[in-house]
Image (tube, rainbow over all chains, first blue to last red; front, side, top):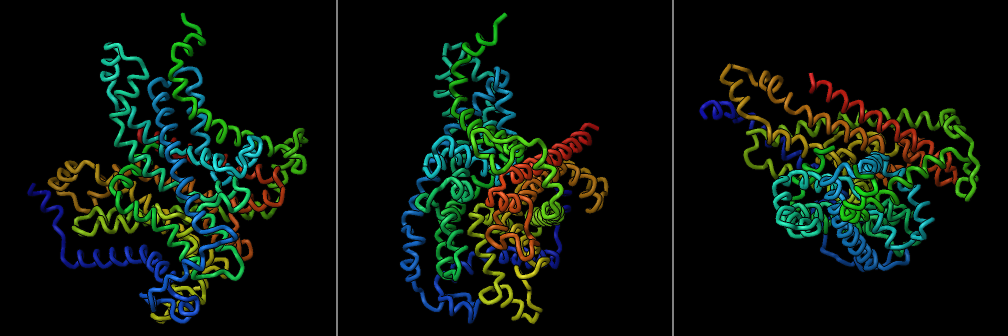
Length: 284
Length: 296
């Protein structure tokens, strides 16, 4: 105890240096958010005159009605697409990955299971951006191009979801399952009455992380879409940013709409998100 | 002696559980990869037809004879090396600072500030950075001007554009590597440090011989993740530079995508295969190195 106290004794000046440094780094990381938010309320003209102003001249929400229609599609539709695609792909991902990881963890040596595991590992090692291109061909062959289901199905597959579930299922003691078998439970009962009730916390973590990750997805959405009708907010933002003579204030306003929901969700559940992402990553 | 078929039938419920996962993995993982590799052996003009013309390794020969691709590959390696060192180094420093008794309170706040960009949609983050670098709108040059420093050319010259991408990507990714380091620092065996302290070890010796060896897995994981991440650098290029100025930021994934966009499917998919081989090769050799040292 004494040694510990001695070891962690800190000098005052060093502590001040550490705090100043920490505050500077923290502000540098957060400043882009503030600048984005303030710029959404300032006219393009005003920003060019004074890019550093920390507060808008006036709280003017008119920009949000100005971008109510982007590229011929209502802003509300992009928001609805984002919510629908992210929610559906999250639910699908949780169900499919939980069942898959459970089967692969319980019976790793069944015929075909090792091959499936390798297939999955190769898939997540493949450069994602370059995988999306042949996925376009697959979607074409399956007739899913331009459809919501194509986008949702593709977004349901992810590494961190699988690793989190796999880790959890591995930690369930064999005795628990053996006892249930001796009591005459069949495999469906073991899964639905014993394993899944134990897994509620990890399921919430996986769902949360999947939602955050899938909200940000853009390339698969862009590639599988045939028209802006199925674009999500990040894709709408990208296409707005690529336009010539870009509306700077509108871009910042759309960036705010794209960022705010997930930033808020993260801050509300930061402990669960960070613990889950650390745990899911450590199993590489 | 049971046959394979009997084993499968006996365990049919597990096959039922795994079926949706297997379907997604095969349809949207294995099949596109096989398709991509197959296309890389066909003539681009016939690649999408039912009966493509197979031309052996001609696409591979073509890309390795393409100075644009070789330059793009070299550029990708240099950028990746710089980004891995910058991200892992910065993340390690931040994790140590957050974990240290110097920041009694405030450690969590710094952790949140560093991690928020990780869950921020990358498009939104990079769009904001693109404009921050802008000469007339951007806050960066306005700030440099305010404190009397020379202007930063940002996305307008090759070297500064590369640095600009690196900073924006560090902002987006470093929080994740910090998280891994921090998690590993938090679970380290503190009794060992006390023992070392009682034995008269200096702070430097404590770090060098007690703490750093325990962080080795975190260094390996972070290095592999960062290597894979930055070899694939794409989104930031699409948002901020489109490969310019003068090809200075045209990394392999973006170069391959440009070819794909021009209908040069064979060469684009050959590049994908090459990048895939590089990613697998690097990851496996680093894991091997780690295993060997751990087994010593």
